[in-house]
Length: 170
Image (cartoon, rainbow, N blue to C red; front, side):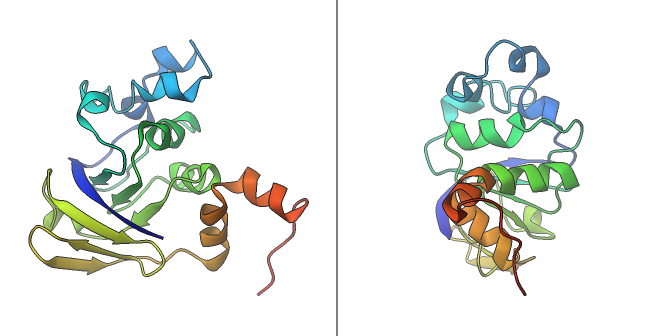
């Protein structure tokens, strides 16, 4: 799972309310409509600026706040291919895997990436390469099981493909 695209950079503590303000999540369940409001809490023009395949790079504690499953879903439906952060809130991290949004935890990534840079992210290797300045960092690799879930597009699709839930073996 490799992704390449333009970076949209954010700081620490990006909350789920900044990712998808609560005032929208009660209006519709249509993720394509909700995606138009992705990141609106901190970047009102985000949806108009991004292109399919772009990446988000952020500091620590990305996705903090409530347990809104809509937060990773709107990012995915907006067309963001991957979120790279120095750390994620625990619930956002798991929700992202469950909905099939590729994520990568790379400590100090904000030190080598600026908004507008082109980066390449390799989820399986846990690595990001800034193509704009030739700097790279390695981070946390996902487990084989979480990679399988992502490759199927999320937990529901993985379970459906398995014919029901099957506990992973070592």
